[in-house]
Length: 602
Image 1 (cartoon, one colour):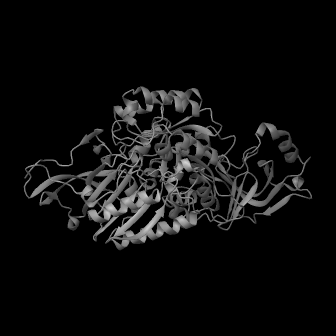
Image 2 (cartoon, helix red, strand yellow):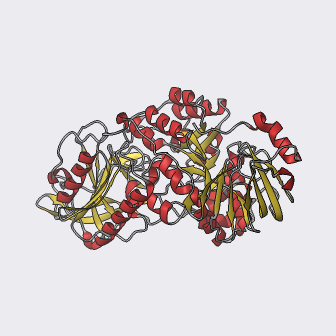
Image 3 (tube, helix red, strand yellow):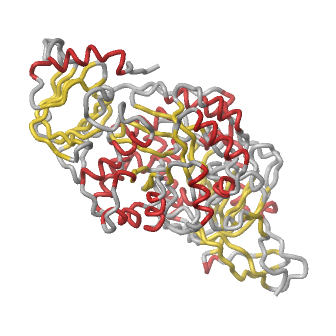
């Protein structure tokens, strides 16, 4: 287990190093100190590190240099605190915690606050514990929030497991649990649901932070009830008004830039144009797939984006360091380059573009110029975490046929899920679709294809069919994924039923993943053997396979930005407006099932 000594246990050593009575393990010389406490950039600064913590930060650390002290020359570059991701799901990267860490450390991320509710929905408490224990072995700080909503919307979906008040209360005693994961059942909180208030109470009694998820544009009484229930932050805002409302009520407004969620630009105006105090704003990613991590970056990408929206660089850095640490009550451990804190820092020559030239975590150099300089052994998951895709039968094209209502004429009026590019919400559309030989037809001319949810936890063989618009597929094809937030059944989107059956059966064969078939041939596959969510392969290999998937989707007519992420959220029945689950179509504005057809006949 990779641990760091408590400040209290090494305070005497830190004092001795700071005062020159003992040599430091490492000294960084002549940098520009990005001080997130004072908001200053202080030139000609030295840093002395001992016991994996900062001992001295000031104008001259020569008194701390001994024969064995490692000296790093900053050469007048910026000394930036290691970046923190305040809210994220490792599983969205399609890799293990270890591989996620390997991918993001070169980008300057040294602290992550992860919510493993994806694996929790498949494997229950065992899955959460597996990720919790793996997180503790990392050379960077990976803290875990106990999932609050497994399933996310009881009665509207059936997950592979269920976690209740007793499980949450027990997990609060685990050594690496720092709070409660995003409370997605916001109607439950607003309506005093006993389970939701119970898991929040268990977290409050443990003195830990409660994550929020208020995915509604209604900022009236339901919102006020939700805040009164206890959630302390929220990352589901998409508009300026959302950010303002949350901060005014004492919540942290988490602004996310993930692979497919672009919610920073409209909300950051609360600071840049309306003058709100930035201390209650936090940057995060929520969901990043492996391709984004390998090719574009992680929190460094988010900070650069926030600066491009008009934030001062030091303010953007505060939102990805100190603000996050303070929110989780860890400002005496993380988030700044100040004595006693964990020695997590970045050296960069440009505070706007933020190239990550050196990464130090807990006093050790882990990456330089975009490359890891340390060895992080691969993680191993038990057999109980694999072979989780149980279809119960071999699916046929007929399983994906949609019969018209009895007595229907030549057309029907159908409810259609409308994808919104770069946003998590969907639109509830209505489309007139043709009927031929009793079967409702897709309308590719108007970008309407089929979606199906295949039950994969209990081998029932059940398939729920519907329609979706926004992907742009224009050839015979189908894409299937066992990543289907949050209950993680299987989602299949396609333009013909034969390919839909082939794609679904293929994932049953390999134990989970994402695959795309066109005209009966497999064009791309990302195998995800761990819970049908994560790969056992290296992050760069997964990223290459994910890129092949993107190219295959493009070849089939889909040009959406990060269409895979959009695909994987189509069953997320806690974000409006229209979703699909194993129960049927779900109207998330009323939290109730609705029929596929608006009218029986025309």
